[in-house]
Amino acid sequence: MERITISINEDLAVAFDRLIAQRGYKNRSEAVRDLVRNHLETELAQENNEGYCVANISYVFNHHERDLAERLTVLQHDHHDLTVATMHAHLDHDNCLESVILRGSTAAVRAFADAMKAERGVRHGQLNLVAVDFSSGHDHQHGYVPRGKARTHIHMRPKT
Image (cartoon, rainbow, N blue to C red):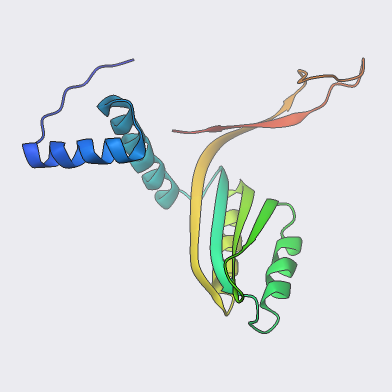
């Protein structure tokens, strides 16, 4: 671990300490690491449309909107190679929140998320994307695997 020292004015330090307490950090170092990691990830995700990612798109929609729930479901099925899981929550009698976990090429995930957010009636759409190093072909075992039946699977490690 590398040690760095920074200087900030008192008002900023007080505000930062208040944020640390609100978020439950044990110390300033943990909070700074998260801020730096978050900033680097945001920059990496915005400038790079290559490679692979894991992502979450969340959005709110009115389920009474004409055929919207069906259109969203069809979009997810059309992109089953990107869609890992979907969680659906009822906010009130009209509005629902959905959160879709995605993984795949960054360009494909962005295009899919843009299509979801562009559906008429979708509100508050937000994509959270994390660039990953993607590797496959591992033949080591996780848990019980019958003799001679090693599974090939994917490993994804966040880049930051």
